[in-house]
Length: 236
Ligand SMILES: [Zn+2]
Image: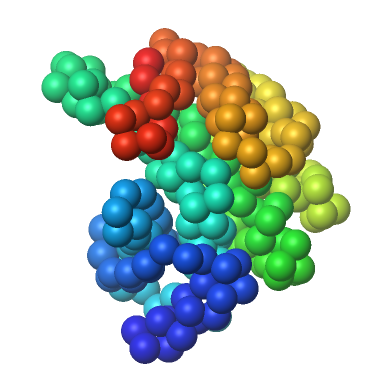
């Protein structure tokens, strides 16, 4: 844990993170996750599972810290899914929450682009680890759920970007799920860079999430609205 703290601190320095950062071990988490809270004492909370995070998972930690940077420089919506609190009592909120969360995962394209600028080579480590984890599933024809479809599309878009050979995986993507992966990968590859101008970047984020939701055939059209804190939340 001490060593992990040191690593987190190095990334905080590299990316110039200004808000407080806490790291908590949470066995229910896959890899790691971040949530950012704006306000009078702004804070990023990184949750990491109990697996040893050193070595091969450094790219995951750096990834979360870039989310923190986007939260500070653009809006906390770039580091987590937040909703209009009025939605929380709605009957189907948890399903819609899940759908927006899945659709918002396309943000990782922007996150990893910036991470690569500071740590060249991390993208390669990341896609290679993903390919090794996912290849056996693909070969056995295990179907992917929506989260997996988006993750595969991110992987393909990033592999194409750095010239990583992923044709063995791509050629196995069949049927409707395969079509969705391809459509999403095309969308991700053509994403314009963020400009660190809040309004413009939130528009780009909204457009992205709407398109992903459309490709995945979700019955929602998420929109970003301003919350009373001055930051932004999703509505649908
Ligand atoms: Zn992410």
